[in-house]
Image: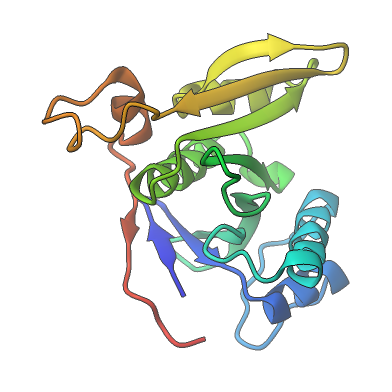
Length: 195
């Protein structure tokens, strides 16, 4: 399985069995969970992942990732894709942290890692949304390099595009979106490990 590693975090790609533990709210074997993990959002994300597995098959690596602190391995939230890229190469993301870990830059760091993984995997664009009154979530997407592309009565919609290809495909110089997605907290995708 793939693991994304940043300066302070490890994004662990959940298996369906691990997602079931999150939904149930009880840690599996060898799991380290911070107090208040999982919260309702984590359980909803794990449920969505399991429903996707049942409906269309396991989407990994475009699935759910558990956000863990690199220093002690404790799970503090989740980030992930809402399935595999569509026929236009577009995916949707979601994320969340337990309250005690908010405001420390962890969500932006995790999202940057996920965006870099998406770009490196050939995804053309990533979209996400936040409630109109959720300034913190809007800030996370903007800090990760996504731009506001619209809003409706309930949500602000964000997006990042790589339709012109990666920096390497363009012959070198990175664009502003490449720079934002590949900041100092860029992930390293480790080799697959046995579960």
